[in-house]
Amino acid sequence: MLQVRALVSSTHHVCVRYRLEAFRAAWQEQGCKLVFEELPTNRFSRFRSLYSQRHEEITLLQRKTISCYETDLLADRAHRFIYDFDDAVWLRDSYSNKGLYSSKQMARFRRIVRAADTVVAGNQFLLEQALDMGAKRARLIPTCVDPYLYPLAEHSEWNRDLVWIGSSSTLKGIQMFGRILDQIHLALPKTRLRSICDHHPRLERMPVVEIPWKEETEAHEIAKGAIGISWLPEDDWSRGKCGLKILQYMAAGLPVVTNDIGVHREMVHDGLNGFLVKTPAEWIEAIRFLQRHPQIRQQMGMEGRRIVEEKYSIEVGAAAWLQLMQPSQPALVAAAA
Image 1 (cartoon, rainbow, N blue to C red):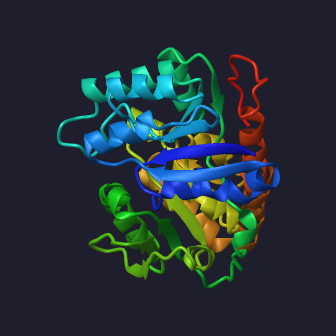
Image 2: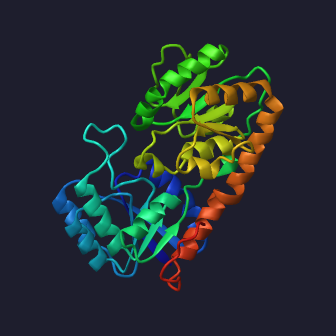
Image 3: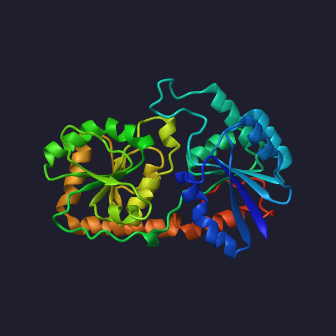
């Protein structure tokens, strides 16, 4: 049986859950065993972990940027070295006081993508960056969800709620967007924000329904809303995001309203499963239209669900990974799954 040894920062990280753990059962059925190993924070323990990579297995480093020396060690010891990433890991995030660009992170990222036998990127922007940095073999496999875990939203006429799901690490984004949310509430007073998170935004006018995030309830809580929303700053860190929350909204049959950046424009087909907007006036108009037309909300939501089933489902992602792990794959694959 082929064994994939995944080196991760934490087995509880959302990226592990959606980009690896989600495929475990499908891989197992095809004779591929997935084993997780958390990378130690102590550098001596991490050295022992990297040195111990067995030559008969695939070693998969997920998202983490390790030192150049550690990368060279891993590439030398692993029989096959795969690097999977779903963020612009060569940058600091949009909210860092130090700014986006880090020469240290860039140097680490460049060494990893050049050393890996295969690089797996979560979106087209990330794929192009890996190729520009010298990756010899790269493949786009988007983040995937299981749509059948999500009940479909009912879209009753009285429901005007917006839904935002995130974590404390992304809360700064929704706070930056808070001014527009307050304008939406002024224009559409029955609108509330359903916040599904471990912490919640503090807004001046928009009422916030605080829903503690739990893995076992998140799908049902999303489906209780009317419209899924997402907002990202205009920068390269945002272009590296892979749209998980949008996929979750679509899986639950919600139309999506979001700003026109990065992967948003790939997932949201304007006027079909949601709206891509720019100005506060466009945000208000899109939400007003969807609130007034629950039947169109439902139609758009079902179109989003169809897109998830066809392009972003666990079955699609598992098959792409299994194909990639076959030793006979060509040297460079730059197409989407």
